[in-house]
Length: 277
Image 1 (tube, rainbow, N blue to C red):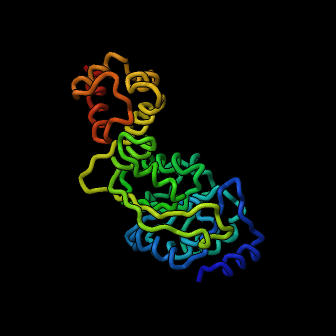
Image 2 (tube, rainbow, N blue to C red):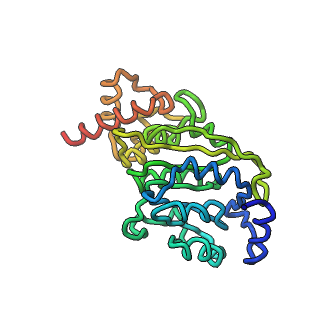
Image 3 (cartoon, rainbow, N blue to C red):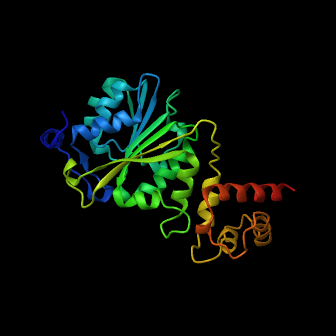
């Protein structure tokens, strides 16, 4: 049973503590752990990847549920603990910053169907984008993030919060906020409330990882027009962008936050086709 006393006992046993610079807060609520694993829908046909397992609040059960389980952990101080609950149970751990990780680092057959992670706010966006780039066939992602981050992830066109993360998660699949998690569910308690969300890839929905750099370029200069922002990347000429927008019945003065996710894919398609002419 993973509760506050159990977490404190594990930390003492292995001589561990939370590293503030890595955004470490250890989950100590068994109900939340069970709910996250239920959302992940892990079974013996599942290859599961966990990013940042920490002391293994999710890992201890996930490794037993999955057909293949891999964790990527930046902090090597957790090695003894993770060896006992993951590697001794048939899973594997890669000690690396996920932002430096490559899919080739995985063992054969470990390409994930499901990705789970408690994401520190300071690396939330780059990790979420990298997961979508690394694993375009991933069936489901279950993330715990700061609740405030939900505004950016679920933002609609025309709002200040709307940006690459809003667009790209929408293009990847169906996203849902599942539930909130109070501060008392962690050791040490964070300063903010957390929330758990899912992104589920929809059958037949096309996902192109090259959309990531395109959409990021479109929002690179938020105060500028889309033409100026997108052309600043050097990949597309202003004239071609203006032509593409005109063919979509959009004004040349349109800004990135005014386009819907599907309009970004349409714009990208026109620009790619124009380049190939």
